Amino acid sequence: MMFAVLLLAFTCNAFRSSILQQESDADIIEVAVRANGKKASQKNRQASTSAGRKRNNSTSAAKEQTSDADAAVRIWEATLGTPPPWLNTYAQKCFAGYLDVAYHNKEHALDVYGFMLNVFLKDTRKVAWLAKTALALSALCHDYGHPGLNNGFMNKFCDDQIDTALLNPVELSGANAIKAEICSKPQVGGSAGSFMAYTPTSGLAVLPPDANLSFPAFQGCGKTSEGCSSIEETFHASKAAAYWELETFEINRRSSLVRMRKRRKFAAMLKDTVLATDFGYDFALREQLASLKGRAGAELSRHIAMHAADINAASAPNFVWWSASVLAEFARQYHVGGPGPPPAANVHEVAKNQFSWSLGVRALLYASYQALGVNAGYTGKDVLKDGAAVVAADSESSVAVEAFQLLERNILLWRDCAAATKDSADKHPIESNSKSSSVQLREVIIQKTLQACGWAGHPEYGLQLSRW
Image (cartoon, rainbow, N blue to C red; front, side, top):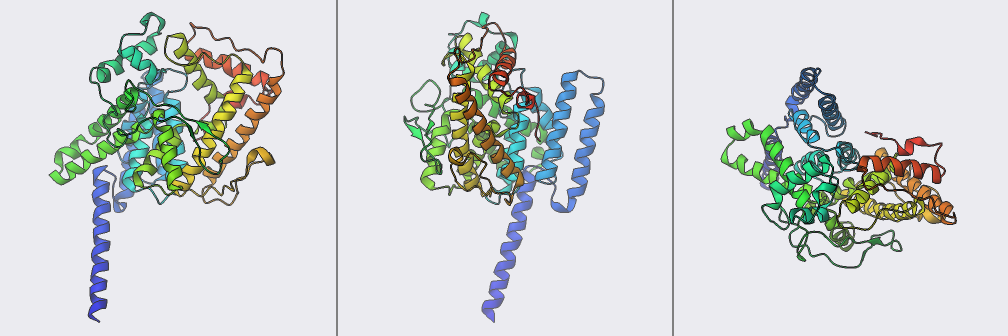
């Protein structure tokens, strides 16, 4: 009898501690506890409406930011429940910092955010609430101020090895902002700690079930051989943390010392999560996942979710728009003297490379689904053998299923295009004007690809669309 009483008391205390911890975590990010959920949701919608009214007479850019912020609130409500009351203004600040470049723009931020919440966070039980919040907020700000030119370019720009006359005003302003804040304070690994020990290695990253499909490993970035400098990601991370701290300033000011420490810890988690988008860590993340056979811990799960969501565009309905966007930025980087190969010379080269890239994304998404407990019903069959989508329709997450089905479709489309253009006399050349912006180059690549691949009847492949 005494044992039963003690067991009951222990259970009650554990349950009470769990509730207190949840409320403490909720307080850190100012998300109302469930009893006040309706009030917080109403307050958030009122804030969104008020923000929209104030901007009715503002510029079209400001209206777009408000609209995108409203979409961020709507996506959070549909997937995670009641959002923080300051989510709308936080999202507006993030979106306002994105530049008019081909790929690393606010459309990309909203797409990564939508994928993150709908595919990874909505159903998984392997990611704690605070980590989910860090992932969502990181997605919104993860490429803030990106100039459309990568870390390799920024290394040279920071060392004054780039002819600034070759840059357009958008690229120059973005690069200067990053240089002023980050390059004047050299730091390897940025402001996070977990990635600083990573040393780039050579070889190929392989993940099941694609044991025969190797994905080229990127050899890291930065000025040293010890690891990535993450110049741009450190800049993005600092903005994400700064805007979160700004939105919760009043809460921080009223907090106890214990809660202040927890908030500082959350800010560090936010920065660390943004740093996971540095592609220099791709090989290390895949290698860790493979060695753990999909059984990732909390930190690795958060990192892999951020990384996989960041490169999810291969599974998008408008996959050509996204592929052309990335290729346009690579071409632009080459033209302004940054490191990297010359632009794709023809559509055959584009299709062949995107086919290979999409297979790598497929392997990563599969492993990510396993690690995060997202049951996509994936059978593990080789799509190249049976030529059909192999995702079961009875998955727990229909959005995750759809993403995989689209990815399988896109892989087949790129494969068929590569085969169809292989024997053509000129393989459908793509002219890359060195004076064109990345946005202009993107349109050239889209039109050439749709025509050469026989996709003229599917203009939606190359349109700017939002699936969320």
